[in-house]
Length: 378
Ligand SMILES: Cc1cc2nc3c(=O)[nH]c(=O)nc-3n(C[C@H](O)[C@H](O)[C@H](O)COP(=O)(O)OP(=O)(O)OC[C@H]3O[C@@H](n4cnc5c(N)ncnc54)[C@H](O)[C@@H]3O)c2cc1C
Image (cartoon, rainbow, N blue to C red; front, side, top):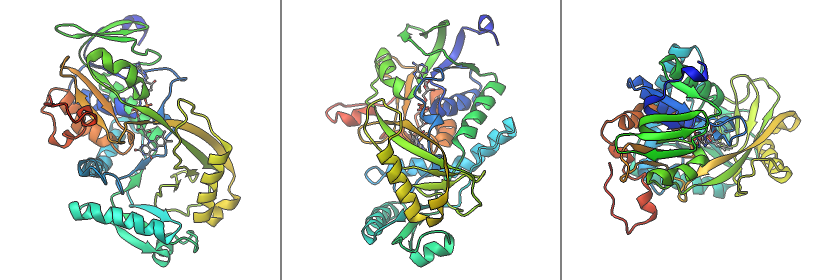
């Protein structure tokens, strides 16, 4: 569609075409809404294109059970979510859910991890797990090192290709009539009595509702519609090896083998502002941990490495909120946009389209950062 042909009036405009924005946008067109997604360009910060691809539940929500349950619900929905995307686009998100493994180098790590998972299972039996000693671990993964203390296993975890997922969402969204506007960052959102004016470099769009799903860009947009986005970047670095023969049937937090055979190595966290580069010391540590866990990786060649920025709230939990001052303006923030993609499409989108606010979202409001505020959710 050329610029001149773009309709200017939509039921809903979504700012941000990453995994969060596109999962919501696809959910919204499934609800029959006329939706436009305004996105940045190739130089934008884009966690959706630089992440590790885990669909992960294990260990999440230690201080907030609903977060564990929200993650579990999304993980359980992922197979159907990916199957529908495959039917609608022919693009396979490569999801697998064999369960996930957290590798522990020391008995202390194993014990601390076990205590966390036990406290979660006591509160919800569906958050079950198993402790694997080294022998049990190597029965499941013969390539694991005999030097590891053991591992924690949860059947609730899996992994997917984040890039194919994003591509499938883009194609499915547009196939249902959604309008994608790349290189078209939202400059301003102006609340009007009956709608929102959305100012973009290619002109003004008119929207009945707006969704701020612009990742780190939400910090600038949120105050325009009476919302708050207390977010900061947290860098992760990832390395990818050449393709290897299959040796790892389970995703782990540090190492996962993709369906094509390449091996992703990751799981670092650094507060370095908006620097999304890589650094030698962190890459060396990632490589050390990967080699310690799987000695066969010692000879694997690294073919790519990058840094990307997570979008973190102060307590690491998501924010899903509608503006009280300007109803119809929504914000969505999270740092697990792969894991939560299915729930964002299935549960968040119907609420944004006009349905009731799901009870499961109750804790995910910014009032939690200011306990003196009384808050009613809309
Ligand atoms: C190293 C790393 C590893 C990760 N691993 C995992 C994992 O294993 N599992 C998991 O579930 N999650 C993981 N994540 C998190 C996951 O990648 C993010 O939660 C998810 O990508 C967030 O998506 P997003 O759409 O909110 O943000 P982004 O992907 O950053 O997208 C934001 C989009 O908004 C656009 N934008 C910015 N400003 C504007 C504006 N003003 N107007 C319009 N558009 C705008 C940008 O161009 C961009 O396309 C990881 C993240 C990192 C960095």
